[in-house]
Length: 214
Image 1: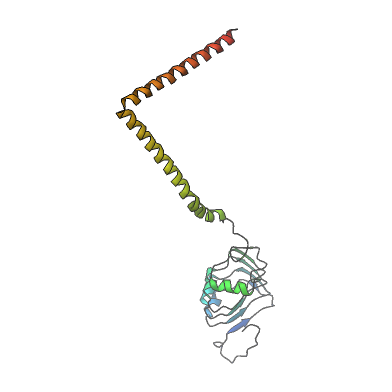
Image 2: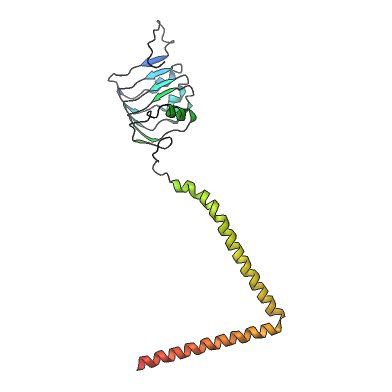
């Protein structure tokens, strides 16, 4: 229906296209326009329309062409826009739209066919645009996968290390418990180490005191 001139009779019920582009229209887009569920073409481009796009725009199930470009529209793109399954032409360029672009296969297809449909809205972000939305933290999405890759080997290493330490300690304890000769040798070694450490500390302190008094 885009750029076609259609003639209608006396009834308005047959209207399938509205083109009010290139005027000086001001104000907001009325919510009542969503009641035109038989409308196939709506062109309000090149005006001075302001305000937000009505959230009820998703009720216009029959619309195939929607052009709201070159206005002063603000706010976020309604998520209901992705419900327009018959939409084959969309242009929201050069407004003041902000926020995340609603997800949907239909909108993704329209963007692939015409990547300029969101141009001139510096506040828009998220896929399919290359700008990340504020608050998005890409490493947070990647960290769970990285943690999943690296945490398992680390946990396995520490588990093996702890198990080996406990097993070795238990073997030494059992050997000392059942082997008298080992137990005697262990305590002798312990006493010897203790005596050497004690002598070393006493001698070192004596030398320090001697240097201090001299």
